[in-house]
Amino acid sequence: MVQEKTWEEFRETGLMLFVNSLLHIFGWALVFEIEREEIKCVSPARVKFRGFDEKSVTEAYIKVSQHMVKNSMTLLDEASAE
Image (cartoon, rainbow, N blue to C red; front, side, top):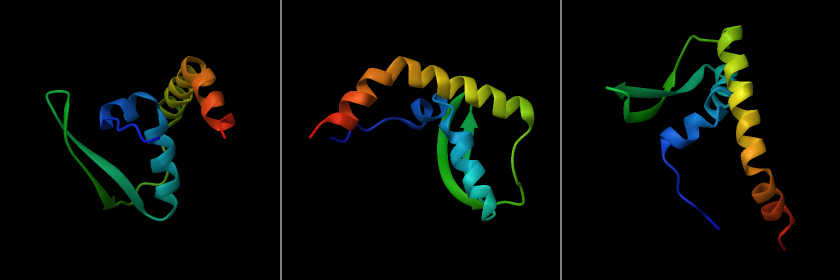
């Protein structure tokens, strides 16, 4: 099963920070161009950034935890399906 999601839905899960944390190891990131709170474009980019501030990481952990609580049964069902 593949269920397409928007970039905004992906960002709301908190997972974007963790994806970019991994990409930062290699000097890369996914960059969002946002105008009036709407995502206009997402593209890969070379960056000098390496990591995120503590507040951003804490907020992302909370979002990921909320996402897991909200979707845990679905994720378990999908993982258990044969």
